[in-house]
Length: 382
Image (cartoon, rainbow, N blue to C red; front, top):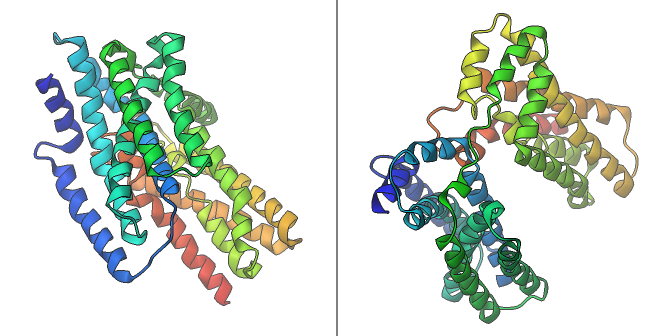
């Protein structure tokens, strides 16, 4: 059990826990920077608990579904192992990675700007552990009995009910402790192979680019990675809600900022970085620009334009009509966002990542939106 945990920990954190040595100083700077700035936001405890738990659950699910994690698991399956020890080592290593490298950053921000006490901290931490363990159970739920899956879902339901009823710490703490204990019991009887999904082969479709069918590759890739589609749908939902925050703002200032924000579609902007095999194959193709890069740019342009169109339609319904120049500005921002994302992916792909979470949270994703925000400021000044 210890050897398997060390094997995964070494892969996720690095040989000498380099990921932690890099992350903790950054989180410390963020915490003290925000704390000393004097910025304070009043957040109810149940909102804090829900934020931390939902974030931890999402990161844990993406870590479990990462192709690199599955490939490493396949190698360990070649060795003799005890099932229960393998499961707890695997979930423990991935959970530690989620909590120490991702959730810790969120906690640093929240506790720097929110006047929370020790009680909230001691509840938020078990809540994140509960979210990680329950997410692991649900991920492996295909191999569980339906009744076990339903019982596993009762704890998140109870947690959400407590949030809706705005209950305090005395209610949340028994829920998270009971959920963690129940998840540990379920994991003790879970088959280790339930966590293995295999490598989703899609690089073979790259050869279709020779026949100008890059669209088929993109469609197949997104159908294989449905969480990318969910993220895009969530962004479109944000586009519909965003005009609510701009009601009291001048449209000439608010609309370009909205266009810039809506270019932040992280998963669609890392299609090459997250699949090094396909990227390597693409670079050997003749006329890569015409066969793949241009269709990829057009694909991102259409996705950005769809988000901007929803944003403008929602803005029109809430604040009144907009002129043709605004629609042209939306198309310009959608095109520049797509072009900048594709150029970064082609000339500066992300290397050396451990799991797909590293790609989703890489600072590079802010370069294009930040540049467009500067452009929005310039347009407003003019």
